Length: 285
Image (tube, rainbow, N blue to C red):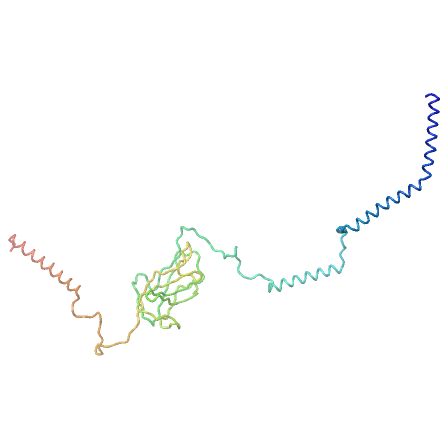
């Protein structure tokens, strides 16, 4: 670098240094101006913050867990005792009662659909004894045996039904199924029962938990109504001297009897006449 250039640079630096010293002499004035400007800005921000609604920040849950004390444990034990006593009072004795069910329904056994439904056979009276007639007022005995019953009913109902008056007569209700004989006193009629008629009756036996019109199921006892018997009302004795007349008694022959006798006599006469004619023609006499 040339000496002239070095000199010029020294002069320039000296002039700049003199100017900067004058500028730093007024540094306190710049500070006052700065305070004025910044103070104005702070006042504006304070006013804006006062006008705006304040927002509360949700306090974060404390990460510190309270340590349990003896008082808390005793309160918890008291609460447990109260809850247990409340449960016991709500359930009575605290023990479950009732029968066990599945889906709200009692369990039932299913059998092969190819198996027949259960039934019974009459023992008293015997099926070969023919139609039975019982006088109203006497004791009547019915006995039977179960057949093809895989699931025995707990109890059965025994009734007698008459189609003439559409009435049903109770013989036994809720009778144990193990009992296969029943005695019926036809002389004792409950109040309100329809009087007996001289008619035919049907014996009805079915499961007490079911009905007389229940659909038969394989292995289960099906309602029985195959036995028919007759009942008649006794009448007072009237002698022939007192004017008793028999509606079906008559010394004369009925029309049917007359036709039968006429046919028999005609057939016999024709046979004898034909025999005599042919024997005479062949010279047998």
